[in-house]
Image 1 (tube, rainbow, N blue to C red):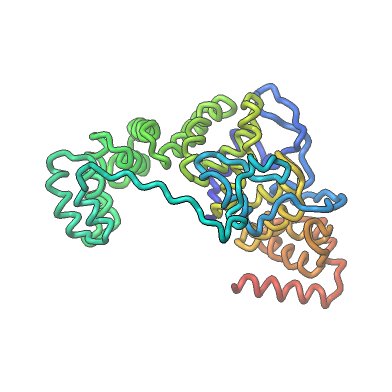
Image 2 (image 1 turned 120 degrees about the vertical axis):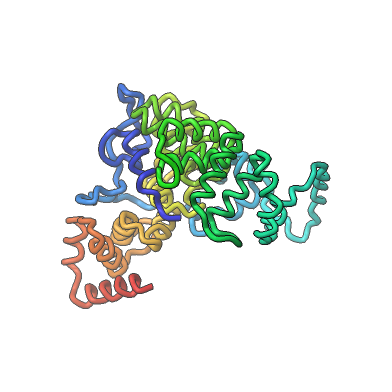
Length: 396
């Protein structure tokens, strides 16, 4: 999942008012407006016009994480993500860490609890839709939709909006989404809110859009919860908006919305009045968003680990997360990765690899005078190798 620039800008604007302040120091001060601030750490998501410097320091003798394997053992032994299990740090008692499934190989596992029998009436329209029988789904849903069934109306709208088995009909889909939204279907309220915001298939109406988005969020729709949180932050800049939005970020994050997990990590990290038990989970939420493929979260996870922010410092895991983000095209991660190669933080020193990542980030418009001096100090053969590697990376 690539980063969401609008999400990034909105959250950062609410947190700081100006500039980029993502990876804040572990020891922060409190500002008058309720947002924790402090001296910028060694590695930050760079200003496009000033990449800054990286911290130099001794590497730790051992790593406390492994981003390349995404903490596979902990994931396998932990409760489901919706339970909010914290990543294993290696210093918890065994009874808190759970049993690693790889240690259980060859040992009979308990039987899976039997599923409770479904006693409700099967929905033939949705059943046909799930089997790919779209025309059958239309035949089953249309009579119910005409009689005012919100679920059938939503299904009909979805089929028409995507052109599944029928000609794509945005206007017709908008009509049925509107009918289902009036009937209180959470998914339809979310979709219709988006249509009202866009103003293409239906007249633009921000007030009605906000109302439907709020109602869908309160009804439990995860996408609506995240979007309603964004609306609250946008309409109420600063601490007030973040505080109002936090419960909806939390609900959406628990349901697996990576954007919400990233936002929640930043909010927990920055607001001074967040309870300590929630602050302690900031890195966990950032890790979940990174694991979901959100490249800005991968960048920030790497920065947090290298800087020791919101948890122990771990150069090797930080290097791995920055490598993942850089390989996916995140320009800031490419810049920071060059610094890690130069300073041998989390990896062996490699001037050619450092120059390759610098060349890629420079071509994307990210200036860094320190890296430019480093690059010019290389011999001609090293520069040629770096350019060849950068060209090869771009082609792939």
